[in-house]
Amino acid sequence: MLKISVLTAFPALYSEFVATSLVKLGQQRGLIDFSFFKFSDFCAPKEPIDEPTVGPGPGMIIKPEVIDRAMQGIFEQRGPGYVIFFSPQGTVLSQDVLKKVAQDVGVAAEKAESVSGSDKHLILVCARYEGIDARVERHYADLLLSVGDYVLMGGDLPAQLFLESFLRLVPGVIGNQVSVDADSFSAALLDHDEFGLPVEWREERVPDVLRSGDHGKVAAWRLENSLKKTLVRRFDWFKKKASDRALVAQAKALIPRHYVVLMHGDVMVKSGEVGTTSVTSIDLHDIARTCKTYGVEDFFAVTPLRDQQEIVKTFLGFWRSEMGQKFNQTRTQSISILKLASTFEDVLAAIEEREGARPLVITTSARDVAHATHIDFYDQGFVWRQERPVLFVFGTGQGLAPRILEVSDYLLPPVKGMTEYNHLSVRSAVAIILDRWMGVNPVTSSNARDVF
Ligand SMILES: C[S@@+](CC[C@H](N)C(=O)[O-])C[C@H]1O[C@@H](n2cnc3c(N)ncnc32)[C@H](O)[C@@H]1O
Image (tube, rainbow, N blue to C red; front, side):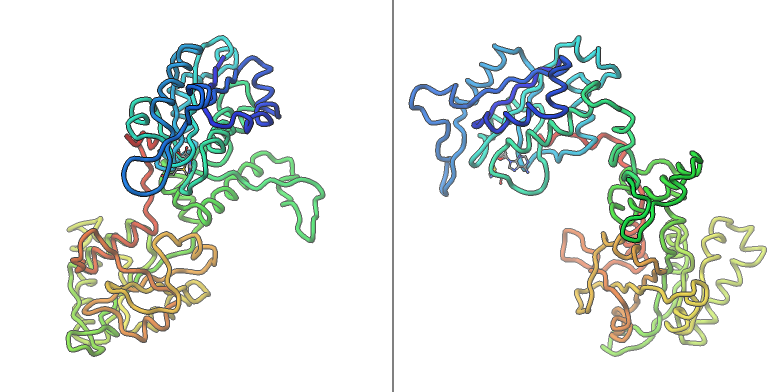
């Protein structure tokens, strides 16, 4: 049995909650047992539960000694337990945090019998006003838990939110544990679309494959549907969770193809005019390697100058030669995606010819410049939903010429660190931007660490 003790100013807020649906069933099945404790029950007659905060400014907090008495009272009546204080400043609630709490509380067992036969205790403390004395939180809380980046008036809805999600993990509380494991956020993917009858609703049909009876095909459809949705809705989640490299490869095949262009023409030069810059072999090498790592299809180097074009051709000639291939095979692989072009328009035409569609052009800048449509490093879902190839444009010299910025669909903000020095090399900027845009590095350690 999991004992759940809730310390609150308003126990009445829970009366429907504990008497409804699966939470009620969990109690009837002998798996969970609630007790509610009211702050005011631990006050002397006429003693208020709150007092003004120390220091200038308005605000009341729950008195430390009231919580202290309440906690000691709960321990005496129901024994020690795992203590959660709710706070917007805590670890943000997620499926991972829930799993970790289930382990820490000792209810992550496989079988309902093992929960009903056990003696575990979870204590939830729900503050109001300005919250709780920081020392009391640090002393008593095993976990400071937030339900999201917004501020509520009190901890009672967070406690109910936590219970709604946590009790699903307590074996026996919900009927079918398999559906829990297939739900969104239990792994790297969001759940697939579900449908009911009728087969046709407002001119949209349930996909035929789901009614085909072919389990293999249904599973494949569901996986692709999950993957597509996750990529355009929650790539932030996917990049943190996708450890299966075969799944990552499948994801890569589902997103639009990406291209990169490095401009040595149509750039601003020191005189403040539009001009040209020289190619450098270190940029060609390093950007090609970065592009290859992140799965960019082609990396174009644009220069209108004949002598500069000759330099690139010599460079390409070496790496395409037998000698170059023997010299360093992995380098040859990356250089194989390097293409020389004379103008930006030539690059657009080459991509359009291959893709059958004009790419969405995303420009970059080291400075804050004006543009009709700014996007962020985290807007890939929005861009990918448009199902068009994507071209990232990087400048050299003093940055891209206004005409290139004007023809681009979107502009990314400058990459910034925590200092005012802002002089990244273009090859560093390419690496950082491609990593933010398409990097997949699953979190390997538990991200359910507490905030203290
Ligand atoms: C008005 S809030 C206090 C906010 C606090 N002054 C702050 O800005 O961090 C009062 C109480 O509501 C609960 N609460 C409010 N927002 C919450 C959230 N996002 N997650 C968890 N608890 C929350 C906490 O118990 C908190 O102590």
